[in-house]
Image (cartoon, rainbow, N blue to C red; front, side, top):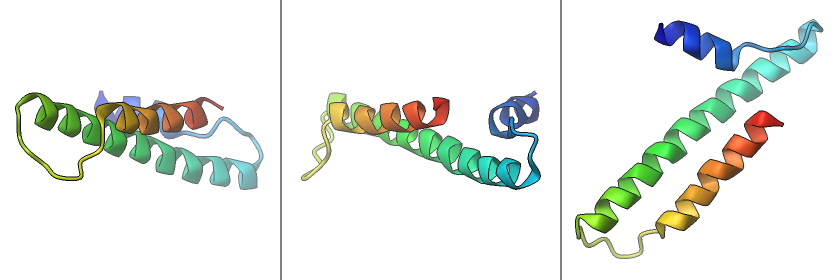
Length: 76
């Protein structure tokens, strides 16, 4: 089931072979970036609200901005 979900989000929509290859690579990079930035957002929120002191940590809103940025790029 997880593999079908991953295949659905990563598979290219283009019928041209060269464009499909480029779209596949872009989708892999964007889905990976979305996953990692979401993990970073959860980590920052967790550390913020459990009072784990981290000097120089990002604000949760900044990290959420990264998540939104990659999501917008993926849907374009």
